[in-house]
Image 1: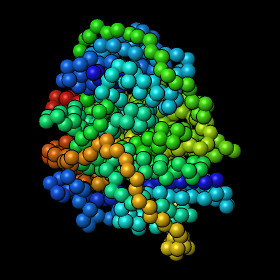
Image 2 (image 1 turned 90 degrees about the horizontal axis):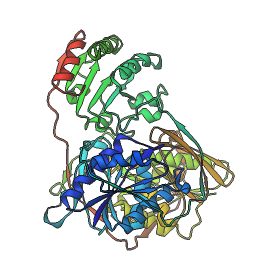
Image 3 (image 1 turned 30 degrees about the horizontal axis):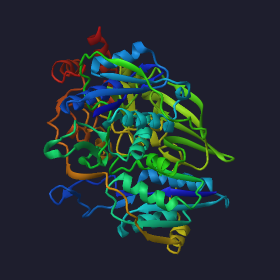
Image 4 (image 1 turned 45 degrees about the vertical axis):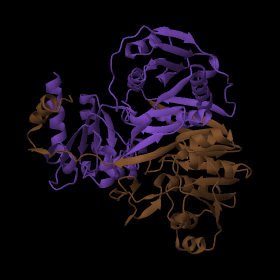
Length: 322
Length: 245
């Protein structure tokens, strides 16, 4: 028995979500009194792999052969499923990231394993059951899902589990999976936007609505985001109007996020928007309408014109950070 | 070109979500159901790709008869025919198994789904189908072009985007940006009534998971309102009280 965790890296560097899933998987392994095996796919240094030991990986499998140097869902899924079989892992953990969303269902079918997609807490295992809490109805509710299969997969939402130090002496092993690269899919181009904070993983999100009056006013929001080291987001009317790209839309039909701090600026707070942001730990609302529904879910509110308040707030943040 | 679009019947986005039966079932009483917004995007793209007589669009739904108004809506938007697999699905694996069983001998060139349904937010069916049918499956695509017997798709990845060439047959889950949702016109609504909607019985599929309970988020505490001049005070509270900066 073992717990297997897929630790995702981008061009040889782990992101925060990788350490979150390893920390989460370590706690499950500890509760099950078993070892934690991590698998990494693609080119990455031993030094980088060793970092997983800090969060509790007893063994790291490095599937570094050339066929896997560009991302291919089917080849990656094969490597993860092979590793689960060879390590006799009965619980497999992935991040519910963009690539995790492609991999997890394929691994599920390969292993005939039930899956909880978008878990937000550790499994409950009382009475021989295995039940995991996940977001449902785009954040309006939680579903408690029981996994009934022998092998079980959990994909963990970003920002749902804290990173926990758990220093372990880790062994790095090369791993070769029984697969061939997928000839039906080829990567034409990869475009990295490294200067931007990824929205699902961001700890602070600055989000704008129609109260900003037009795309020309987004600079003040971006200044505030830069001062806070935050990602930028927007409401649905803003992306529908083409003021901001669709991938910034948070809400029920956009991205559901759970940052530590969510700043809703000029957003009235329709039920669809609130669904997507209500699991944020702290919510700040800036809106000129004191009756706006956003104030019902906010922890702190400023009633005022966003165009006047935001630059002052940016100054205050800069002064605070020195 | 033969296209298949997988559709879900979901509660309207304005629904206040409640549960019955000891919090084990979603309370559908008084709830307006709609075509899942992401599936609407997938369907609109499929119709766009077959415009000018360049193929057919079939929609498929796994669920009970209550979904038929939503299926008719898909026909009104422009799908040519529809299939409903009669079952009460309990998880994504069941849904994908039913669709895979149906698709097996039908030679679809392209299967589209929405990126996720807005009720269970699993985003699993497209990936499972790819594995079951052994054809490529690409998740969370925001741009899709058909070029010969290949599609070029742009999908989101961590910290950027990836452009892929994928040979057909293939499965794609569609996000915002793939197409503008089409609104049915009067002719579409009239013709939808007479378009074929076939109901077939579900086949056996293993049960891998089960929802045992639903809960709703705790109500949040009350808001502390500050004046428009108190931005420094807000920063101090975020630091000392909320401890988030």
